Image 1 (cartoon, rainbow, N blue to C red):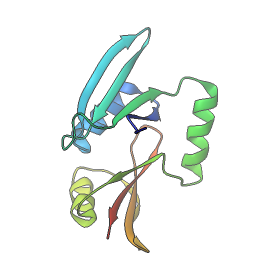
Image 2 (tube, rainbow, N blue to C red):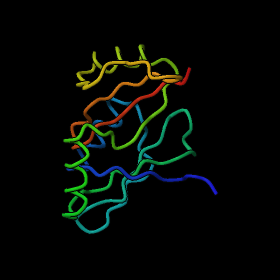
Image 3 (cartoon, rainbow, N blue to C red):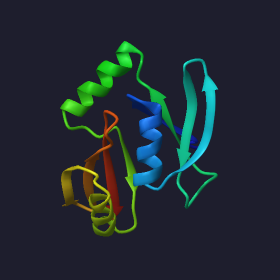
Image 4 (spheres, rainbow, N blue to C red):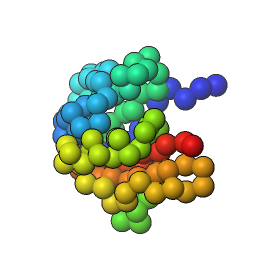
Length: 128
């Protein structure tokens, strides 16, 4: 068994696609209209056949409540691995990404958390 898909609830799929591709550097994999929404996924350019991130609309009241609740508690919706967290942090800051936590060493990892502008906090992590 392997992980092939991870969903992130977003307030606006088009805005999310812009952020995840233009700021984070992911590549659009699927963009399939399904009614008023889309099956919209992005992948890492380093592994285009790897795990997809589904930019899932939060139009369900339960999803919206969940998303808002974890955001307000400061809990990241997901985590992405990076090779050099300080370099990634500086690059993203230059692109206007707002961090809620700067790179912080926590045991054998260093993490930072940013706002994806679509209702989520996202963690980046560098393993030592």
